[in-house]
Image (cartoon, rainbow, N blue to C red):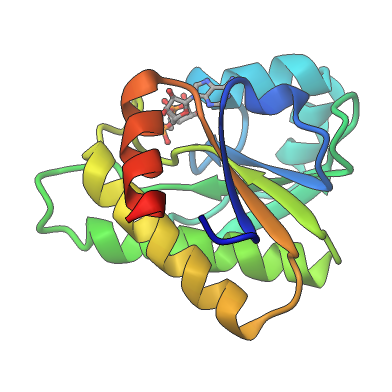
Length: 169
Ligand code: AR6
């Protein structure tokens, strides 16, 4: 596995990194899944700050402080809802990863942890999502020195196995 890409299975809210990524919805006001977990761990101040951001488009990313997280920043992105694959879902998910990594660079985050965006409540197929995540991250890192390392944090066993196989191949 390449040195600048890491893989773990676990809870992203406890990651000791410069920035954790949130798989939010376009309101940025919180929700279920990893979004709910991040808001609970960061504290109620996060919703207050997010309210001032005026939402976020699919494929884009906005940054807040990490508040009670170990992470200094939270990079909120909005993945596409899977609607069968003919609604530019793959391109939109690729845009999420590019936006995340650009924001990480802009905020001088050396270490970033990213969950499996869109693969939960938004039903994006896990294999395709992982291929896009790894391809876009490899592309970005090949031409940028920051972030130094990107950790994919898989919550479920299925995603972890898919990432492990792709990163080892
Ligand atoms: N740490 C890491 N990954 C997690 C955690 C956690 N604590 N909890 C869940 N996951 P989802 P989406 C994984 O549904 O599909 C929210 O309501 C989970 O296993 O959180 O992008 C938002 O507000 C899955 O692999 O996000 C939106 O409305 C991955 O995180 C909507 O869900 C993403 O699943 C976004 O849906």
